[in-house]
Picture 1 (tube, rainbow, N blue to C red):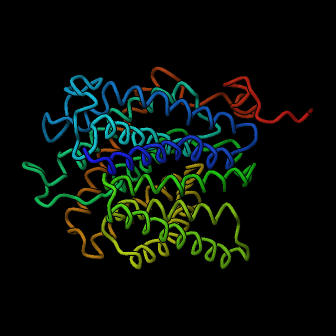
Picture 2 (spheres, helix red, strand yellow):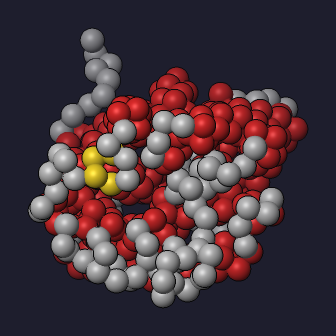
Picture 3 (tube, one colour):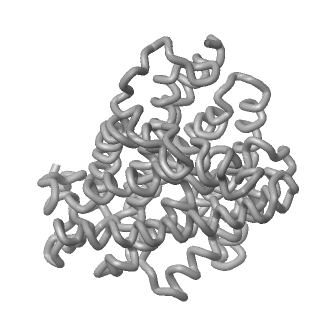
Length: 393
């Protein structure tokens, strides 16, 4: 065990959990109407709790067990046989478990942005549970657990795909799943309502930005120069994408908005995620600059051209960002085109099919959508019996 590596991954674990609660919760919560903000907080917090238990029970073993190249099996369920002295590389395996658990939390939490303001809470919990076990954990095994796409013996690609911190594992899977749910769920009754609290959005984005240092820097699994470079390029890409998003918004509308600026931040962070272990600061600058424009254009394409109410642009920002960053590794020569594009296609098709099946199965048990009356009332009151703001006081 290396003490420095262990200390750094402890910090990184806390940072990645901080991304979901409170970072993502505030970011998403500020974007919805005032009558739905608590429902977003509730969904993010409940997912964090539920995914933690399921990661212990099944997820970690499926992702990082060694049964075969398709899935890891259940040999490590409930961390049976793993003690504080068991190592994974230079850190305790229980710490590696905890670090990866925070990824298993934020990935289904990202999907929340697609269905806010109209989804039933029971659907959220059951769907997120099944999706993490049946989509996220197997894909994690394929890429990070020595599986199908990793380049290990018996894998599809001899050299394996390169995905440093989750361009495919986290952002492509969450983005595609969000799109599938948005299509099945249908649009909100009233889509033309501005964010109720842009201040929350900025605060949440700032927390995500800081937390992303643990997300990408921690994925080096060591306290070394590679982690330092990953943090540096992460910051540069985020800054670059923020500015190009705001500039493009100014060109189109004559004004740059706070919500637009910080959404660009998230686009830059998602795009650098798969590449952060290899690219230089100048290449990160380029990735962010392009992502700030490409992801903004995709927001318009999804909502205006395809008429899909992916409410908080999960696919356009996270899905497209992660896919773009994965491709840029091939553009810059750090990975092979066949590995990157082939893995994107395989994971994309798998995610589409399994997500659709899960959605249809869960609908047989719980309604996917609240009633029209409940949607008008707001999910805070109708689903949870609470209000975020007491206007009478």
